[in-house]
Length: 115
Image (tube, rainbow, N blue to C red; front, side, top):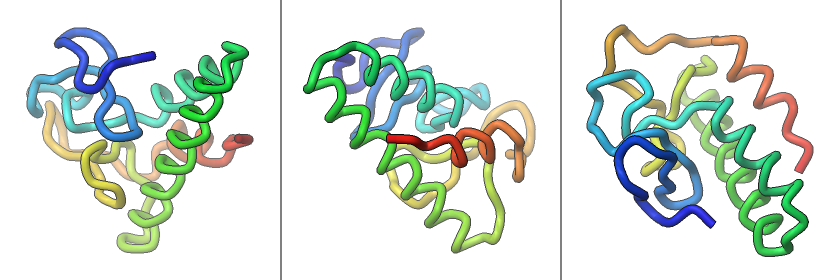
């Protein structure tokens, strides 16, 4: 399993969602931002592992990710490209450009939840 707040440069876990980096807001992918494609790939990988522990973790991640997407959508009326992995129901920020909304990959991943 991935350990909480794993080292810089790899995938880390905060709570029940994953992030790519422990650097604070230098790039759009940096902590505490989480991205739909990363969540989707990790959930699918955990489900395919065959481990009951991994399946339980995948279900927790999927539920938390969908919940945070839903809460943000209800608050803002928009789908966002990234979400705050530390605070369920908050969208992400920082990075090289203004955070985007209604990105197709977020909408697609949100719609593919089959856990």
